Length: 341
Image (cartoon, rainbow, N blue to C red; front, side):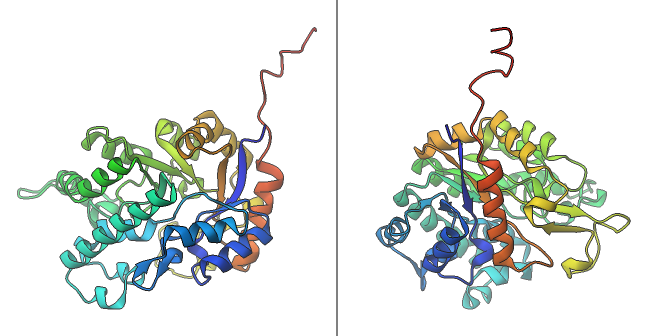
């Protein structure tokens, strides 16, 4: 019996309309898709749930989730005043104060969650922003040292709990899981960080994980990370990278071809994707997703990127690799069961 189906994330394909994205995904071999929240917009409003469902149904594809990473990240990062949030918000909103931008992002994400609930999407991949501040996000000790009148870590804990309370309450009311992608520059950059968020939020049920092995490149292996948060993995991405030797991982260089860590096509990267999918099975991801979403199979959602290969070609190659190599039938029992029969 099949456990997985090939799917694809839409954020990297934001230049396409929802219909164009689905046409591309289907042609590439995907069975389902995870569009970004931007693809679901109609001007300042969202498309109706009926229009979105019809667009999927006409192509015979499943709606596997809605990528809301950027909206959530803006909400939890706006307080820092960082200009890096501007690409993800309307130009007129970007001119507002940090507090006003945060309020706009909160309202936007609440509406996005309402739409997801109407669409039957109960697992929402996203990531929380820099709630602890950029000093702590740097990973260097001065962010952790306490001063006579400050403690950035404790302040960050309080800030995260308060700033996310309304969003978490709404998610719980709708039965939605907010699947944080453990990622550099977010509120949880490793498994221990994520478990800390769960702890300070008193074990909030809606705090889930979107597994992505391509962000495990600074000491914590993907196996270590996802075993530590195993029971909270409700979503996943399939993505690969390479580490170029003898180059600094942290470097003031925006050209991906010159960086030490590079995202690459899924078949040729440093990570063994088959072992990663086996881990997802081991920690119960497919059963968890299928149970919550009421589906027979869980998506393996391709998010392939490359510094050299065309984006559409990279994603299509990834979708086909997932379809042909990672959507394998599960063993019904031990391979030793028939020995000596």
